[in-house]
Image 1 (cartoon, rainbow, N blue to C red):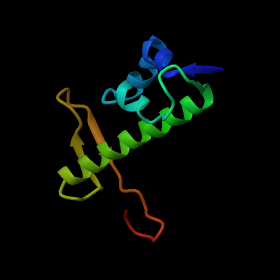
Image 2 (cartoon, helix red, strand yellow):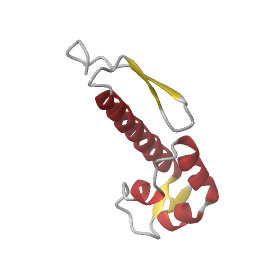
Image 3 (tube, rainbow, N blue to C red):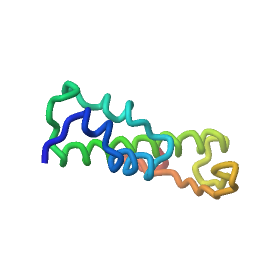
Image 4 (cartoon, rainbow, N blue to C red):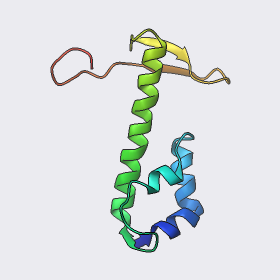
Length: 100
C-alpha cells in the first residue's frame, strides 16, 4: 500500500496511532522524517517503521530527561505527570558494559 504525506496528515487513523502511543509526538515532526514531496507516494511499511523509530526516539528523550531530573541516576522513581502517574526509569546497559 502506498500513501502520501498529504494523505497521512489528513488521516485520523495515523494521527490516532501516533498521538495515541505518545502524546508528545507531532505529526509535522514525524512527516519531516521523509524526504518525499507532499504528494509523492511512500510505502506503508516504511511509514510504520519510521513511526516506530520516531516514537522510540521520543521515549528515549523522555527517559534521558527523567534521569537528568533525578541527578543523573537512572535507578530512580519519579511522578511522571500532574496526575501522579509513576514512572520507573532504569538505565540501559551500554555495549561497553556498565550504564549508558
